[in-house]
Length: 281
Length: 174
Image (cartoon, rainbow over all chains, first blue to last red; front, top):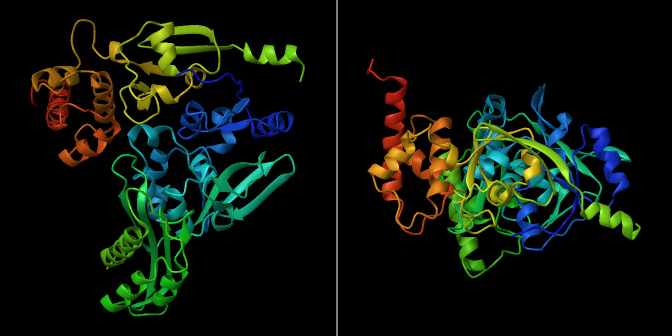
């Protein structure tokens, strides 16, 4: 189906991109296009202009910055899944990236695009929430950093201003943490009915830090704070894991739809969380 | 914005050069033309099929710079400067690609509509991972929806194609 007409520019630098957006405030950023182009076909989005970010070198590459990994916003999912530094220091991000969509989508889709799109059942937000990642955003007014937690406001809603662009994701290294991502995909769409991301750091047989983040279950990905609190400081056994898993949806308005009722989804999230935690042992 | 400016914007055409099946194609093209439309409607390369046209079925899969991509979900202007291989470019002259031979040998199709996409997906997966396990083949075929075969013969064909390609690299079994 032919897309409605729009104007197109491919800026050659970040400065040029920001300037072009300031001149055409109704324009939209085009990153991998894996969500935006289908939305335009379905007339859910009709931007008068697209600014294609593929020519902006500053948005590429993965760098080691000491305690952090710097992931350029145009990093493709396939690159995130395979990068040796990411696999070593933020394995959870790789594990989630390799479960996104299908091979064609992972070859085109980008980290920044996925976060900015903020689909409530997307894989990356859960992993990046659990890893305490932050995004660096830029506009004509300057740069700012915000946590992924603060970025995600709701379904397809973020704290980004319309003219703001995610330039990078910064992930604190989780080198010694045990990490896992479990996804129950919807059989047709491939999106998560439930997706659970965990990163656990133990010392001397006790949990020093526990992060559990869930996608697909509520209107945005969330951290399971009460479940995390149950694990903190504990010598983990079957009973503690079961108690934590039972609290994973605590305080959440769990989604129900034709495929998975709210009660089923809640139960599934608890089971998936328990199995994911058990799998780390 | 004046009416004149709007009209100019709608008529915008972007010069692009895309290397398609080894030949450079230079043209000026409207930004809303999809790569699938460029291939089929502008270049008459109708081997690339468009099924769902919403990035789900994978029938339109081609290789872009050696990686599998759904041509219905990339603008032709985004392929500027890149190399695209379609099903028409898969074989070498009159010799079928090992993936094509394997699909024929295992009858990895029924109606054939998704087959161009399945062939390109298989070829791309084997470039990326020349010795996939059965499970990796099944995982990779997630990128194509085939309503006829139940996938079994496609999995067989991809496994066989991997062996045929390995034979090509080491023709004397050394």
